[in-house]
Image (tube, rainbow, N blue to C red; front, side, top):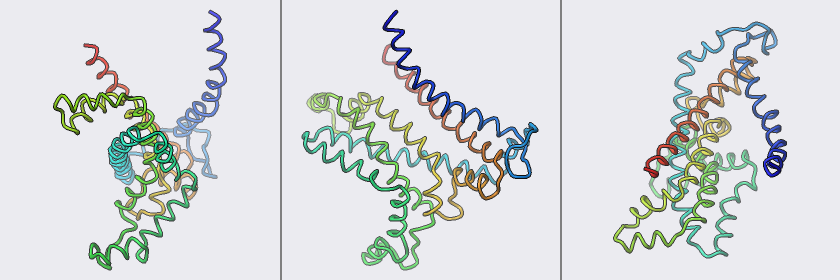
Length: 283
């Protein structure tokens, strides 16, 4: 079939790119996790399971649980905020859609580290937010807005929220908004119309937003590094410490491999959930 052959030729270069720059590094990473450590901290020549077994150390289990918990909370918050924002953007006039879309992508024009340091300045004990809260009697002079899980979650939501809004808006723009008006005419409340009509209609956007959020949150290490405390470290911080400070590359690869498996499990769970919903709809 000529068209089939043409499709294979067009997809050959992207597939080769993924194999060389994505699949091969992942395989190397997983392979290094089963190697010993040499004198320079790199992977040795011997194969061992000790590096993988060390992940069961009680030191790492709370970090993994904290990473999964913070990522799940950040994902729920961002997707929950992205639903009304995307619906409002889709309902807006065409010229206002461009303005709102620009406001969503505007943070990407500034470096991530600069944005995080801006939040660090705002949440500083002498920062604007702290002084404003004290002036409104909503906080005391002893209140700490930095170096706590709340600060980490706040900045993570700020940095990750556009990745939830963009796929949701792409799905909401294609959704027939007249279906919501029809649901309201049939007696449904605003929340019922959104839950029973809008959300199923933008299911693919929800899945895409959830995947992007979980992948981005699970790999976070810059935000906890600059606005979190010693007890707010996530798995990404431990990977950086083992790779650079401790010079233990196999252990860093083992931790990165566990993070990779966590992402794959999340993707598999979302895929299974989507497949079950499709089966229910067909039945």
